[in-house]
Length: 298
Image (cartoon, rainbow, N blue to C red; front, side):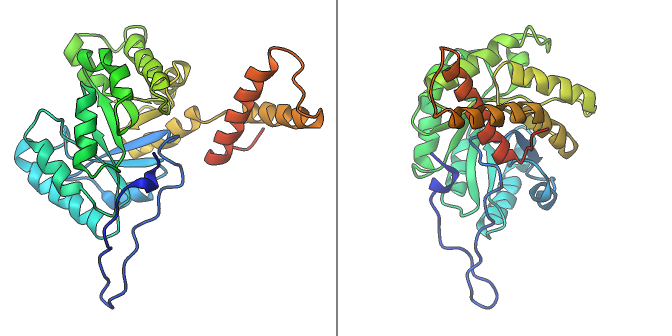
């Protein structure tokens, strides 16, 4: 599924009667997006987020919004997505809450809706019911935030409508009593990586770094990459450049990849030994991502 597979409705008209086209998709496709900027749907700066360098923007009507204000936050999101100014994702409330039904009914068919991030996903059925209620074409990014969700990750990744997995690390720690230590958090992260591979999904999205200190963000983003996750939730726009840089291929790797590919073509694409195919696959992936992210060789 791609972002452009979502259903559309006729765009709202301008004052002169001409249709207002929805904002174009962000430059980096969601399947390979590195930074996913969470924005409080009630009080956040939508325009500022849209102008940021975040690969994808997620308007949050779940944890960021008090229950008493969810209706107001939802109305603000609908207005943004309905008038063609959007093309953003929305983190909706989990399937077990009364808010879920109102969320999906309000969002279904909006021209600016890129997809939904489903909070506290714990079963494949959570994804499929959300997908169906949204019309059967809107991508569902499953946010896994509990012990049960982690153990059900393979089934969630294989669910109809599942687009990508994400890790709700804060709620997971609260659910399990696990510390934020890298070793303690390696299992759930790796579980999502393996599940994504089994479900033929893009790499999963890691939880956010709460610190705004750039060295800390850089270090934790490095852990993300080392464990095989390919994106990261972001809480502050200042974190975006660091996350994007760390998750992108390094310029030196891009240089190696392009040199290898050039040599491979020059020798007639002949496989010389058992290491050539893995190296070819790695080089092709690095080159593809470098072109998508605008990374030049050193």
